[in-house]
Length: 112
Length: 113
Image (cartoon, rainbow over all chains, first blue to last red; front, side):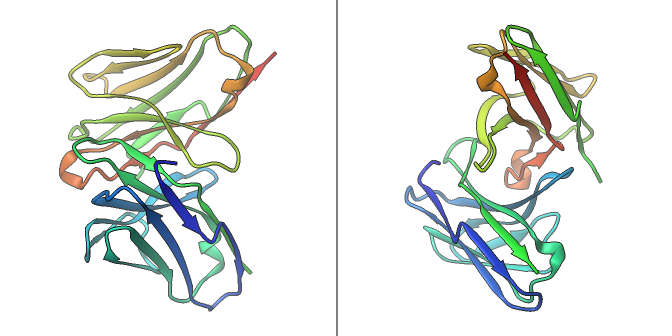
């Protein structure tokens, strides 16, 4: 998994509660990404980061925020979880000097 | 807006056969086209990728064919094996977008023994 860990791996939460997912990498990659995976939609980009404190929105960013205060950690926050945010969330990194993106093991989030 | 369309949604082939998955894109600025393989409960794994300056790339039993004028690319799996049974995703990106990947919807491949 290219030195990427995600935590938690599974989470069940209730509608309206805040949730934070963590992506941690150990290889000092500049670019980091958050995607969600839903049946029939493939993977869709939520937010990405191109450096510490530098982030930008993806195609499905509504209801999500991110933070990157240090190179190794990229946090995804659902301020007030909704059932439509039930999904599998994947973090990815992009290797320096290339286009290749490598994905973490994912976090399965269920919002009840 | 679906910028990368993938077909078929599911595919069943016999062991030893050829699996073919197709993708079409709309954005002519895309300049990198990877394929990912995903097993249940795992993250997508980069399988093979191509740039638009070549028409074909082969790595072992996996080949990407690329048709720039038609804005299409495909994955061919030769001598398909039961261990190839997985979901395959095509994707595309451009450097100026920060290499944000746009994915196809995925193809579930089953290789029967």
